[in-house]
Every structure is written in structure tokens, then in C-alpha cells.
Length: 138
Image 1 (tube, rainbow, N blue to C red):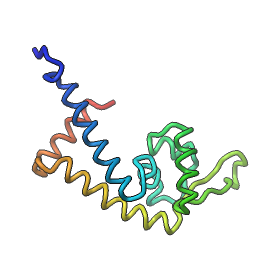
Image 2 (image 1 turned 45 degrees about the vertical axis):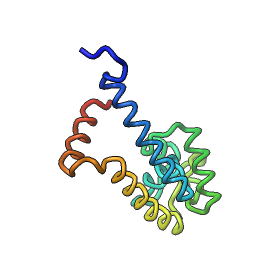
Image 3 (image 1 turned 120 degrees about the horizontal axis):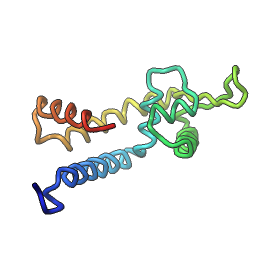
Image 4 (image 1 turned 90 degrees about the horizontal axis):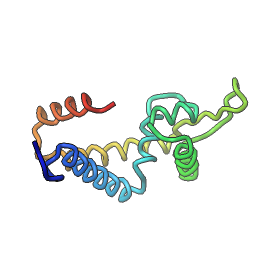
């Protein structure tokens, strides 16, 4: 039974997650983006459009974070917003052509960050770690 904080599995997991998020955030910032922006772009990739509510669920973001992030991405001309013709109070969000290109570039940045974080593991170890983490993640 571990007694020191640093010996707890949860402590190790917390440190690993903080390291991964910091590295990913730094890489995305260097590319002119943010984790929230990437999550929204990734959630829009491959679909015609999403409502902002659906986008929040798909990107695991709070409604206010979705609104702020979509505004930022719209300002960068990476997404478009339009009124839903079937529901006056709903807004539909879609990737613009520039957004599709930006997502493709950012996907490379994210892949490189994943490789940096997990570079000490073999492909099989990475798959095993991911499977184990999914079992303990709600």
C-alpha cells in the first residue's frame, strides 16, 4: 500500500496528464491554435455541420466555451455559422475551406505531440495503456 503521495497511481496519472496537456497546449499555441479550438475543428471534421449544442457534446466542452471558441474560429475564418432553417433559435456551425486545411495541419501537430508524450512506449504498449485508461475513465 503506497503511503507517499508520489507513489499513488492517481498521482502518477495526474502528473502524466498534466505533462501531456502542457506539451499539447504548447505545440498547438506554437501553431496558432489552442486545445479548445482543435477539439472544435476535430468535432466538425467529416460532418456537414453541427448545432452548437451538438458541437459542445462532441467536443466535450461547456456551452460558454463552445460559444467563445466558435467566435474565435469564425474570426479566423475557420468556421462558418448560420441560422438553422428548421429551427430559428439554433445555429449551425461548419468548417470553412480554410478550417478544413487548418484542421489537417493541426492534426499533424497533435500527432507529433502524441509521439513526443508516448515516445518511450512501443506501439503495443501505447495501445495497452490507452485500453487500460479507457477502462478507468467514465
